[in-house]
Length: 133
Length: 423
Image (cartoon, rainbow over all chains, first blue to last red; front, side, top):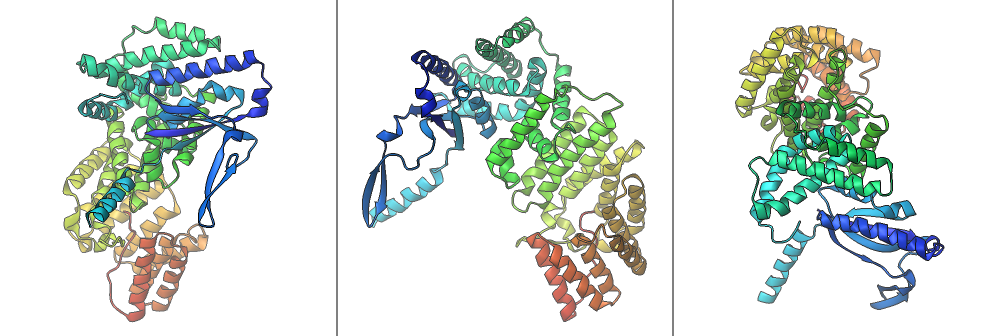
């Protein structure tokens, strides 16, 4: 099963680190990611640029509206996502509990990936029916 | 899962996981000395199997392969951590020196028992014991267990995390209790098995899965530790399970024992349940589960509700009260006495019980009283007791049942007398 891990970090704290400290953190974190890859637990992941680079889309008065910046402002910023392949929730917890990023004060929110297969199948059938008409 | 693995192989490995993960995990916990480490190493070994067996084929005996691979994976993991935590180096060295020790078959069976006793350790809360046992011993996933207990996966995951933390922090030894401790510790294990079973009994939709799991666990336990009470509990569960098809209508309404279509009872389960109960009784070292099984067996042997041997049931309840006194057992005994042709006596016993207050909020006490009053023609009292029972009941099917009974009194149609629903 897939689990999406949202990694939050404190930007102020990160900016306060020396380059050497930052590099040490990257090395140790990437090494753990490699370990996850080697054991088939890594199902994808991306780091995110800073929240100022975000653009938020929504629907307003019958058309698309945009704003600069993230949808929600919090002290902890979403810094990246990691998709984990694990047997169950506790397996995912166990794998992430060993992630060195935690020791730097990062926070992980783990959520089971939603299974949209049935909904997608049903939708495909509806759409096929509509085109057949 | 790596790409290009044939579906057949991943199915084979999944089947292997279901049948072997309990054994493998149990042995790894002993070899590695840590539940989390063992679990992770086992997952990695199964993942490695997917890769390796694809190329090299499935080994003749997959279990030793998986155990040995997991041990190497664990040492790798510890070495990785040792770079930041020097204390881990000694552990890695220690495990390496032992890597060539092959676990004996007999030891592996003991390991399973160790794991069961650890998961059911009395230091854990019952909900933690249940969750941990189902996951670590039965191999269910967090999500499976959460679904069965109608909680979110996150809630259940936390129960497991907390239970594991307690085991680690309190350094619970990984062992089968000494003969002196055994009765009490076994009691805790049996309670977990029966809790799982009962959860399956009451849950309307997801129940059968949990009951099956409890019976499977009971069988495993009996294989590993053939104590009379283990045998008695397995007998009890089989006898209760034998009536699953008969105890609710297609609409999900509750059907009491005396109203059930006995041709729907599972005769194989009854035969096995009775044989187990008899063997437990013959040991003369049995306890409360065996006596409850014996009561269930008397019901199972009766070809009709009317021909039930209530004398024997009342006598069995007398013995049960002596070894496990409880107001609920007293209530059941009172009903049995009433069924032996002494409804006034039964009613007096129930009134005395209710007066003591312990069962004041137990709807079955009020519904049993209602039935006895109705039988004795005291209809106003019967109605009042049904109303009390209705105010306390929470399960939908039970509520519908009570409402139907109340209607029957009001409109005067005759119904048979039901007794305690479980035994």
